[in-house]
Length: 408
Image 1 (cartoon, rainbow, N blue to C red):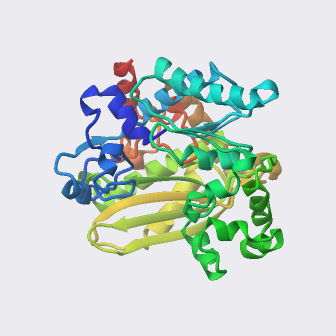
Image 2 (image 1 turned 135 degrees about the horizontal axis):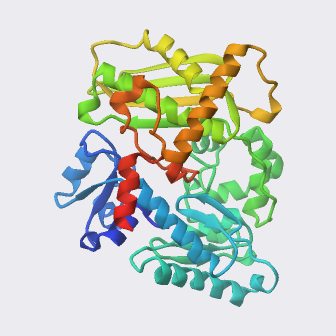
């Protein structure tokens, strides 16, 4: 999907169609755009642009506060629309999915026809103003690259015969897995463009990447269709840009406890334990930030994490204006691969966490919570992570669930 959050807003609000529009987490000039329509991109506005800067770049800019619940609802409709045409192999994120073609569907004419049918099904069943780009290729990696070559609303087909020349005009950063640091590393090895990358041997890929991912990439670039590697989750995190009225030490503390509440709840639903908790705070009108990490053993109950946070919070700077907060749970281990604690107090805390979860799953996320987050119980609302689609009922605030009902 192209400029997904902004496109959904234009889909739901016809008055925004054809106009420069950005979606923001909160209505504050100090925050960043999390999506920009193609009309806004023409002014140089993109994801990550400060709202204040975006307004200077485009005087007629429409600024819309994010409504994640509606984006998830629209995502589910898109998934259903695609499934009317062919099975989905994997949903990668809120705005991206892939389909594996088999049998007669792999024939060129049939495959191309399916690509157009997918686009038509989304327009018919979800909305004509929602635009998507389709990539068709010998493997998922090249198909993803192809889907980004013609935006918005494009359709690009890459066959084995087209490789590698068709990719030469692209920048290295256009290839999945090559970010800023990897691009810099490649330049140190005299790899400045995609053509240079294709000239490398498999052993050189291994040498530069320093892991088997490099060798794997060398096969994918040549159109080989390799099975997906199983991955294990490394972190569970939640972050939040504070609204102006929440930028006090006490309210920031309440927001952080709210984030811990959400992160611990997710951790238990994923059936993981965390070994570390990290707290981050960025401050307004300064480059200064604060970050602390504490080992908590292998825990997943909210109470243990709040106790660890309280210990770290004593060291937080005072007298500064907080701007944004984050909680990261790391050193994760599947619960079924970890021996249960012999300490009765930890057992009681886990029993308490399970009881709270049952109440919140039945009546809504904030039906019962620790009193220390009361001032922020409606702060840090539902957000959509890059590679996961949240459970609306489990994570949505009361106001978000009301918005969903009103929209329906």
